[in-house]
Length: 284
Length: 293
Image 1: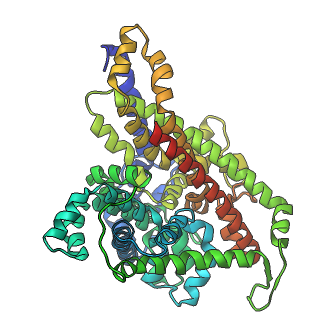
Image 2: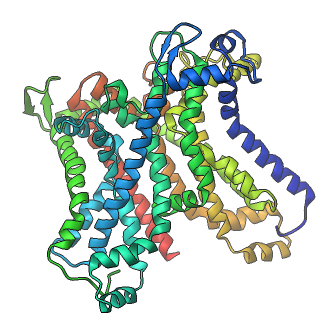
């Protein structure tokens, strides 16, 4: 702060608090709704803004399914959480492994068509899955990968951002390290494992956080890809609870929403340092 | 930039790039080629017969009033999301950059919506605006505004904009904050010594120095509202009422997978690819500039 202005400082905190409150309001309401019963929510106009006493019951049904108080059959979200978790782990792990290897090849070797390879990877930067859903769906279907973890994750793994990140990083690694490794008689894979991998650990952590969130929050692709209920990610499960003609049990919907938000939100808050680095790095 | 020292091997580099190349070829180039091929073919819904029709699908597309309408909707939506999202985030970032105490806490409490899936964000906001128990819908009725996003297209648009902005503020905020922190303190102090008020310092020093960040975020926000908001639209309005909030990505999905018009959907995919490529080129030209700066 350049000068002392108590009034301005007060205003600053007031604006920030208002911002925090507005951002958090939907979350508060979701939490409150998940502790009430479906009748309490729909019959009070507007719904009560104070926590109810039905939390245990609601979360039990949201997680493990069963007959709700209003009489509808609810599919539990615990299996869906597992699907989300597996996909959200495959995507970052696959992406990091694959792109580190190809960035290593591009930076540390000279081979024919190296530039062509580089450009082929570069172009994929421009094609998010949303713009090619139809044809990618057909490819995945013809490979028999519908309703599989491979189908859910692999088409999302292939993107250039991670490859570029590692390429940029490898280019900054001093040449002396390669020379020293060679003098000591280390081959390329030994160099990769013992020198590059430890040096890249912060980039790996940062990418992991970003890609975990990306994988967990996928919606459009699983929507097309999965037809069997045991392969639905939890994000899709929520949407299915409010669709259809049946009575929407908002308390269960909101409890499921909390469950679906929890893992990625925890990752963002607890690994904030990596998260920020990952965001800034991947967008250059 | 090139490495001076390299390893020598005739087969190892191929082995190293093989996984990525395999995925890129199968899941990018093959589908992209398919999209291009389908966009110039006419096909029955069962995929049995197809014939070459040239640019007919594109002509049909651009003659289709609902497609042009969807273009307008998307443009309007992305301008609203970008302008609202950027200005709110900038205000919060400037404030967070000013405080001495509690900056870390504010930051943590402002960035978490990034972790929320678009479709979940859609559900949360739908809940607050839904009749009859929706809290905000109720407040609006108290104020004399009869909220109904199922019938009123303006209300529907407002709903998806609010949900999209709410989710994107965290991202914009982080980048603005990083941009603000990279501005040298000495510039601000010099201006303060010369007697410039905080308001004036912001508009004559801080804001111009932030312009690379702002421009970058503008592109990112447009990309976000074009492609990442499918879940929000699907959860809240489903493109309705009528087709009033049917943004381009929603239309590709709807025409291809609900209406089973594969050729039309493929042509739309090709148009979308062109938009993404244009946006990427803009972004990269900007990145080059930033390097010089």
